[in-house]
Image 1: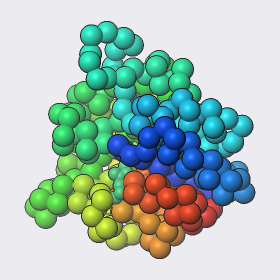
Image 2: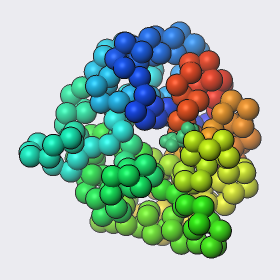
Image 3: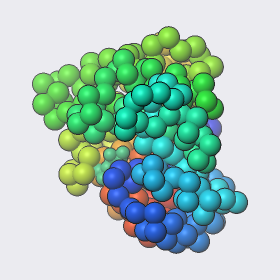
Length: 256
Ligand code: 13P
């Protein structure tokens, strides 16, 4: 636990990687490696939709939870290519990632659509992991905090304190995703502290103190401890390094 009592939360975002067979093999390996870590650290993996149910079955009885990588705002309907929150829930998800920068960049996701998806996630008992983060151009223009604040305000618009208290925020600078170029721990801490201050403004200090804020963007076994050592960094959303059981397990140990 951090000094503020927030339980570290490490999630692996597999993105569009792993067939069903590969996914089940990976979580079997992972379950064996993390059996001793799970108590102090909350752990989840986010496989592609096709692998959610078999992964959830393979992880039954372990402390590793399963996350979707997105969900639609309607429960069902004519929305080709989308998956709904109740579908994720029934398939075995406890969490759902929303507003990832790849969804924003390649699939037209906006703060407004993230807000609608977030409502559906909460209504269906899924814990949302809401992603925010600036591009390199925005950082270089000195607009990081402005952009991240706009994303948090827009995504979380209309939710009360109890609802905000049930969310996880992930700060993922776009320029650090998949580039091997991570934010420094000071850069991460600055944004995390600003997000927490904004949450306090939106939902009160007690709620803000409870919400976990993950860092994402080239988190690896060799930089995880430094990032996770920051007072407002409560976990990590891990991409590439979550595809290898030994690397993901090493990041979990760093969080402990
Ligand atoms: P990488 O860890 O591969 O940089 O990806 C981060 C990410 O986008 C997690 O959601």
